[in-house]
Image (tube, rainbow, N blue to C red; front, side):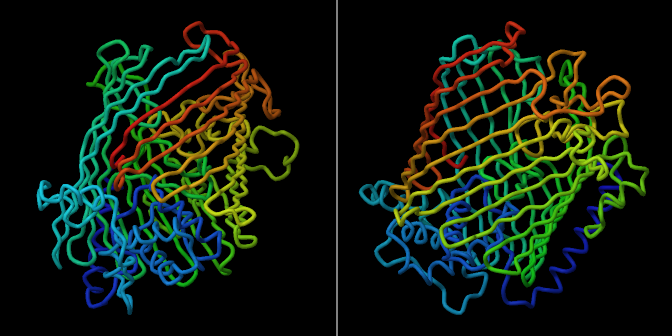
Length: 582
């Protein structure tokens, strides 16, 4: 981290700790608790209850969310549990046990409790062998080991996973992928206002293909090491400290963010890339929620060995969520990527307009702006959307000018259609225009300001000049068992060769005097992939999942790297896995 960023982070942390010390006299902590993991089903459950009309005001479009804030939503549902069906009622009972410490911390006049007959899955599994199990194991009915006192808590769980993926696609590169994961997670609080979270894991990966080198970037996971054909190893770590007051929270460490209501991803910040070091600020007051992140990213380049370090670049983003009416959440956001120098302290100003600051520094960076909404049209029906503006020349809108680089996402979410309980239906469409996410036009000499972290997109997963259509029907039979069927269509207009640039590569911006100023969406070598998928997931005990899915894919005109040519291929892919605390 640059010295200027270190000084800025230190000053903000010092100010936060001082604010926390002054606020110790306050009796409640509305923003307390560690952040809930981005992939946890509770987010989906609370969003579902909001769409049904069982929650009034929720802020779930800037994740992760602190456990205390989620506990407030659960407390509201607990008061309405007589309106819920049996599956939803069991989910609320689980959440009341999951957030028991946070419910106490937020200072409710009456502490909600699970139904008297309720037992967690862990309690049900251990009940027949209670005399044989160690007394300290799952003592709180939630974590493998737990230490709880008024001044300090610690919750410990193992991380373990084993997944197997097989492909029967004729002519394609992919045939097999096996992954073994192990690690541990520890989280808790120190006093009433300081929370901590540590999640470390190692992964062993085996495939049927060679990797690009001894040290390389694994898509979505970052750093990886391979010293044998088809075998790779990579580790992951998420760790942060968080200080909270009634309305304000600040976290410093390594974690991920997701902004927006999209299920398949977010255009500005998604969890598709690996986690990154950041300073995260949050303010929640009245009908507003403000988020600001300052991060250090990796400008990945393939290196021959471990002795060559990766270059760094920096990222700043802020977001304001507004909910003036209980039925609609509106969000505004900005982001900027800085490379080739240290982090400029001007971007540490959480209320600064980044585009203006970029101009102040001579416009060397890659700034973007956008907005999104999440609208509960009527109970059980929601519309949502997001727009990402990478660059804009207003006089050339609608002309196909390459510098108008936009991305769009829109979705329809239906809960319990025709009053059929525990059924969801969703349609989602995303489009990324040519050259979107590519480097700043003022830095044609390198790709450092491309919208990437460790070689993986920070925003939506699909490359420029592509779109993605997703349809899903899902049924939750019980709190533990959920199944879904889905269809998706992915299209990408790739650059046909090294001489022709249609804006389909995130690492290749427009080349002045070589590429056309005007582009056509999905121009170039058009690849189309249709996928039909059925999946099932069963939660044996808390966070221990048995997952399986099978999909049929039909791909046309996609590059097969082994033969360096475009081909058509189709076939089945299936996946089975066990994942505990992953």
